Image 1 (spheres, rainbow, N blue to C red):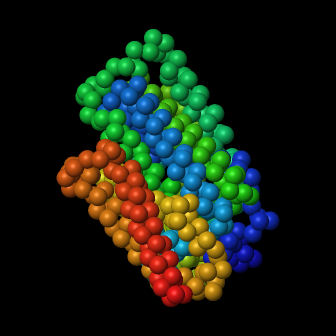
Image 2 (cartoon, helix red, strand yellow; image 1 turned 180 degrees about the vertical axis):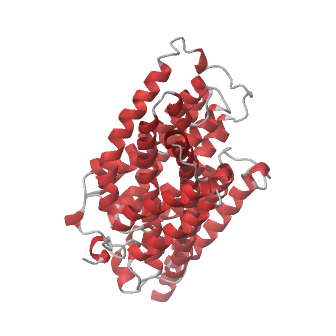
Image 3 (cartoon, rainbow, N blue to C red; image 1 turned 45 degrees about the vertical axis):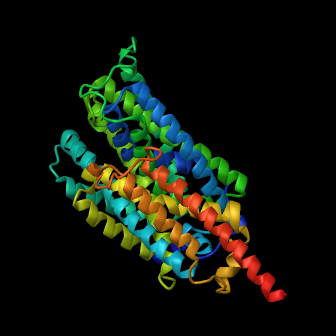
Length: 444
């Protein structure tokens, strides 16, 4: 049979039919699996080496709660419309404006996939060398990993759901066992409040910003998964629990393991305990599910831009581009990449949420796309995005290539989300009032 038979279009350019929708449980497992990955481990290692474990737990708890609420709201929008993020953006930004935003989202996910696969390549290379004695460069290990992960992402959501249903329970069991083994050797628990060897180099607000920046792109594309939910309630519940617990689980365990062992690489920790084969299993499953979601959303974004090409071909293109980027080891600039992409993409979620919940929910109907009744550009959304992104760049520290002109919440991604929401709400209300006045004059 042809590949296109297996690699279904996944309703990329239309609402997911109600007959194909899922309950909150399988969707939650997808979010759990998405949060349990190597990038989360890298974030946890950065927190562990920059502050006390006690402070790191505060950081993870606060950021996970924020992400849970935002992920739940974004998921609600996705289930209500049944559409992908790329199509939803047209309701808030306009036909052309939405395409501009979707193009940007696709670019961000090209980069994100490159970063994630690069992180996979580094650990994969170490495992191949330590366990099997195979010498392979980090770059080529990343390329091979990226190629493997592209396969299931090409098939579509159902493959992601099944992989998540298998991978997360297994990862939960293995990682909990690993953490229990390590923490059990430190019964006194002094490590919980002791500063890291290099002193405190990361504040609580900086830690929250780091996590929010890393997850901002995922919040934006939460409708891509939530559009498969049976109801908005199922969508919100899955998004809230998935972002809250999935994010907290991997990062907090990594923080504790790194501080107790003094080893900053989770894979090296596993190998030091002779968990070689288990380490490979955890690594492959963890990163596979995450990268599948990134590729899947990239394919959906491109599908809303390029209407005549099957989604599976667009997903393959994304995988190839991401693997090429991974070859150049972008993950070595993890904090910088997250900081900049986070402040640029977080406003998108804020704007479409404000538009849906507070301003013009009646716009979010697929018939408007079908009948080409959407204006080219909603300038209120575009202006809000530009203002919020500019503010975000001004609050990013200079060390991360920001302008560092002033500070608001201390979390740049949160700054842009809040600024975008406030500005868009005010401009949107003003636009609605002006429109009402114009109609009144016309009818007079």
